Length: 511
Image: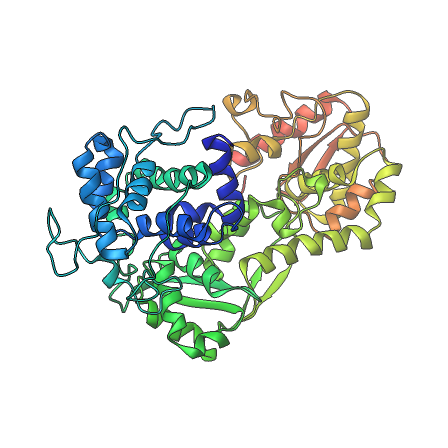
């Protein structure tokens, strides 16, 4: 017999984590247990316990009242009255659920044995009142079209004797119930089979919703609930089941309101006219991920959360292994068309694919090998060129300075890499405090190239990184007065150029 941890893991693996918070799925899981593991009567006993109208009584047992035989008998009587069967089976199921509350144990959980023999008692007549109070008809509040109704028929067939239910079922069911308590959801357990939560509508605000090809109604409901378009996925699924047009929902991007009534959300998605129209998003050379995300959010109805979640999952957008999970430098600068079928995932994937295509067209792999570099290192150098040089003709010269310093074992000491860490817009000057940072991107403190790109390089800078100019230069500094770059071989020459730049910047704002 597996431990409770193993049993719970198996349940989640087979049915998904949602089973712990969805009574209908829990019931479905129990009903699918093979006959060789548990008889029909045994499975039905625990299913009935989940459906128990007097669920508050069972909660009391789970919270420490299992010693009270009177409380157990009362709950069992109510279970039999509502669901049929015999009292002994009902008492066994309820008491089993109330046993083994310590989920920290790693040893095998023994089967429950009652303190004294439990003898069957006649089921209460349906016209007689329950011993404690009339049970609350929670099950009557469930939608009639719910995927797993609480009662299949008003009349149930008689039960045979229960036998001994394998403890695995007890562990699984009890672990799920305790999972609800661990979430502080006692009230949710009481209302488990009440009507699905729904907003009254009509809603307000706006959010972008992406429906993927082949996406199921259930998956749509989960996404809409997460985005707060609908109050619950169950309400959306119920509404879709009542609207035949829901089967025609198209894969597209939709602009929807927040807090919509579920039936309105279904009707909106089912209307082809609501599939989003397109526009364009332009990513400039040198743009950084944070700026690209801001641009997409500004130009589309996609949310920052949707984009950042995709960027945090490199495989979802096709990021190559060489990127090391960091999309910086791999979202290619270009203009992208946003159509009604464009999704956050397809847009980011297109940017990554365009980078891969550019690398292939430029022969980056072979050219990088000749330089003793990897393609990732070439992209890193190219991204630095976007920030360190003022104009295209200077790109190959700056690339040569970088390679010369690397060959001589000199630190690169590039302010652009320091500004990348501090997230300052200005890349010409940095402070002493910024240059003292221990970030691996700080090329004043660390030798070699930074661990990755500092922006998205375009074709021109990639070509310059692959084909640097010939020259002995070890230093460079921008010359804003003449819109060029001053290259030097010695430190003395470089210091003169730096002093000239400082003097210019004192009276001009472009530095």
